[in-house]
Length: 207
Image (cartoon, rainbow, N blue to C red; front, side, top):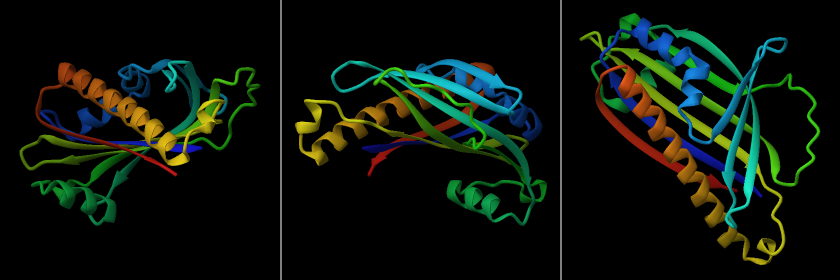
């Protein structure tokens, strides 16, 4: 059963675009804000990160999820459709002439071979777009959009439950995880950089 947890967040930082981009480019610092992320390892030979997440299933059994993620940073030019999309979504007075920055997390293609010996351990995929836009008053808008996908093997007796009910339960748990992770990240940002506004929305999907 495939479950997708999604989270969206928007903050306005009292820092310039360059400083904000440096902050959010620090992969280890951002991921350490996630209470479910127990370990982050940079695999230099592959130029990717390995995340180890831990949470509980509906029966309170521990679940370990592994993710292999590639991080890229790109400049968004003033004519960028993505820049215009994020600027219009926030209805903000951004300085489009300065462009923006996009930090992208994507599922790594070149991953190591890992032997899974526990039925409670899964390899999932994770992705995110962190879009940073420069304000006319030298503040920075940060749009944080992330998702995590896991394909669970439903154990007995949970597999006796109606599929829609089980998906609803699992989706609720994933949504809670994403909500808590997003709030934890923003709390850490607020302690490091003064935030003048914050709006958090989290949602989960399953299919």
